[in-house]
View 1 (tube, rainbow, N blue to C red):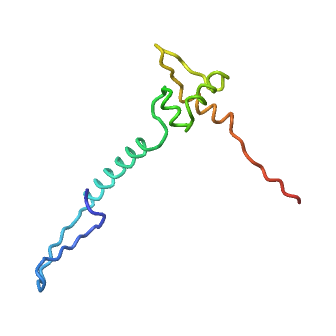
View 2 (cartoon, rainbow, N blue to C red):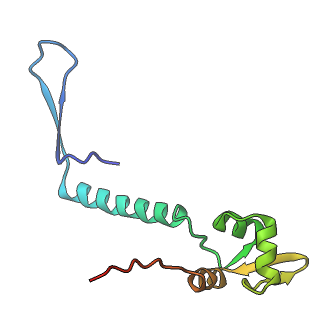
Length: 115
């Protein structure tokens, strides 16, 4: 990637040299750099957002996402808190169902003040 500076000045390695090399970065170079940088940021945000991008998650992915044990996940299944689908012995959970469960169990502490 190009440097952020619009103009880059390089000094020669010789101690008493007064020769400078100048590299001019054009507007097109900066525009290309901006586009590349935005694409890199979008890619990083998508891959590092912490939220899975796939619709169906396996048990280990749900446990990792929620930070819960296998027993807690089993309790969520058994008591109907978290719907699941079983295919060939593998349990799958819909990402939307997980979000709904989190919203449904959301608590907000309210502080009441005397007027």
